[in-house]
Image 1 (cartoon, one colour):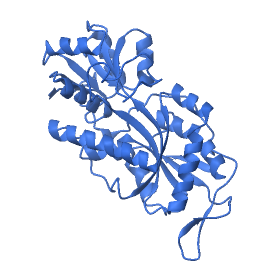
Image 2 (cartoon, rainbow, N blue to C red; image 1 turned 90 degrees about the vertical axis):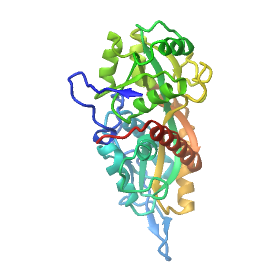
Image 3 (cartoon, rainbow, N blue to C red; image 1 turned 30 degrees about the vertical axis):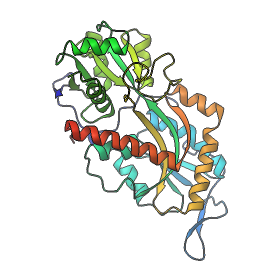
Image 4 (cartoon, rainbow, N blue to C red; image 1 turned 30 degrees about the horizontal axis):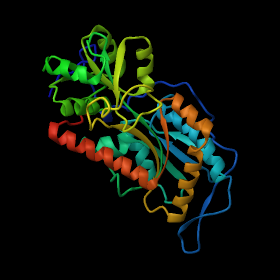
Length: 353
């Protein structure tokens, strides 16, 4: 697989640790203090963390690794108030953007295992970064306690309207007949759109050329012109372009049909088994979180995610709600990490910083 880089201005595209993951700009905002009630955690006589009576001086911090206005921030502001109600706590959202989420994750890694500091993580921290060889100051398996899987967002296989194919099988046949002349765009080397495009290219043996840009906005412009033929992007961002008729959605990378892309077949249903990839959203605590405390946070999170109004609002933001426990989150993170690690090694993809 060959690659050539541009950003529409001739500059090289930065790697994933030089910026945050690309997220659709969202305007849904919530108060920074997520609930009126309060939670405090104290030390038992043996010095082990334990839940204590509520205390106004000890709110729970929910660390968000992206700035206000993005998808992850929007998820946090819907989730945190309800979590606070379930825990009897004040949940304070702290946005710690930058460096691919590493500073945000470090806050949680260094926190006391008392349940007062939680991380709303995405695939970028626990799956993509370690798979692409990023240098991390923590171990993604040993230094965190997975607590709850709360959502996921697949990608859509999008093609330019200049491509004479209306389904994935036809596109694969068309691309194979033009080996080396079909371009797929991404928002940068080793980003999710790059890895998803490489997965499609590898599974179907298409010989496409990767063209990294500084963001997916530039890729959509190239799709309209027909200079780039393919992009794999999340439904929340793609929806406007699909409705405008500038791109066509041929498949979705979820394992099963999703309400995020009604009528769009999965990769397997479209004729390409193995085209499965989802950006997940999950709640983590620091390592050594006491089992009873972890269970309480997990149960509260699952109760929150069962809320019908919350689920509807998340779907409107392009996130498929989940009610998974810590084991489900650990499995999702490990599955994505192993998938990308194998692909990255086989294709010699490396993050550029």
